[in-house]
Amino acid sequence: MTELTIDPTYPPTRQIIYLEVGSPAGLIVIQAAGALPNLVREYILSKLPLKAYLADFNIHDLLESSGNLFPQGVPFTGSHAPEVVVGPDSIPSLCFTSGSEGKPKGVYGRHFSLTYYFPWMSETFGLSENDRFTMLSGIAHDPLQRDSVHQ
Image (cartoon, rainbow, N blue to C red; front, side, top):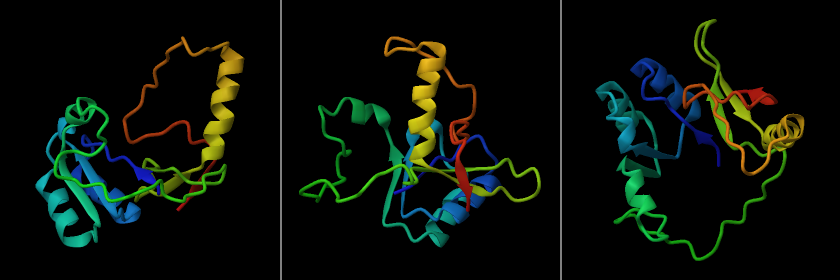
């Protein structure tokens, strides 16, 4: 399973490119991010073959749910964890280039990048579990994905 984040501040046409390239099987729209533009909502409903669509997810409901990871009305039918092997070449995220040369290109991020980057950063800067840092980028931009593969 690959995660794709779409920044709600991006123009609707760019959001549609992300959905077109990512072709998600499931979609969660976070209520606090704001309403989807009509053009994007129409694309989702008419062009995406979604298996799951949570259109108005409230993150606060999840945080106050006493451990129930699924919002009211969304049943969990699994009886055990999925049998998925995760390794350094697994692809957890899909982000996009800026599109400065035309249409943005999808870039898959591998686990390897993060398993290398975080220990390097901790050692280089002497960080511990008590330290905090911030990344100054939009929610759909992932500067940590240094070892990626273009789609």
